[in-house]
Image 1 (cartoon, one colour):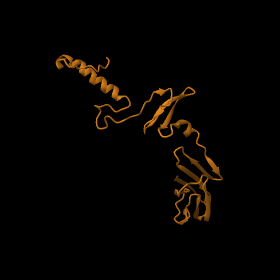
Image 2 (cartoon, rainbow, N blue to C red):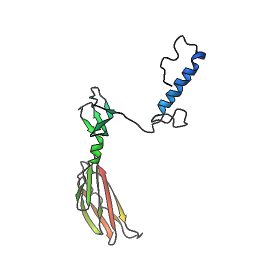
Image 3 (cartoon, rainbow, N blue to C red):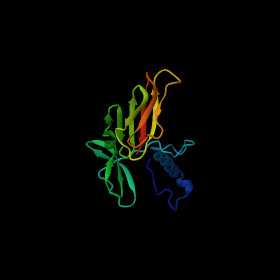
Image 4 (cartoon, rainbow, N blue to C red):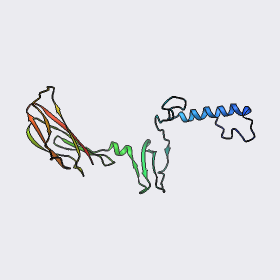
Amino acid sequence: MTFNPAIPAAADDPSVSQGQMLTNFNLTNTYFSTDHIALNAGADQGEHQQVTLNSVIADPGLADPKCSVYIKTVAGDSELFFEKFDNGAAANLVQQMTNLAVTTVGTNNGVTTPWGLIINWGTINTLLGSLAITFAVPFVGVPVVTLGREDNVVPTTKYISYQNGTVTNLGFTAIGSGVGFAGSYIAIGV
């Protein structure tokens, strides 16, 4: 069976071409069901399940205010690319994600994603008092910092936090109330 876009023709009697129209409707639903929830499949019908792309030979070279996500073959592998119209530069998203360089300074780690998100994380060993933490990768603005305790006990008198007003784009001051437990932090921002 193949889809026939000429059905029904203007002079066709619908009762005669009904079988051909039903074939077209069934094929439309079958073709649409590729990467989508089928049109007759309930509440989520028509929504994407995935997006399958065929590989292109060259970057699209967009001229209008548009952008494009596409697949291109690189060294025999299909890789995901993104192109913006404003600079025409194609970005290999697979390469950018697999080549993320983690910066490590002591027990502090940091990474900058291709889209500019900066993530820093690290551990704070036994802390009684305060300790200056310097981010491995500095932020442009002030990040969001979250700390957690690492122990198997639930002592009500031990805590780890950051000193109010000390979070900057370069680091923060951690404060703790005891020996015998450690903590970790994650800071996210741009």
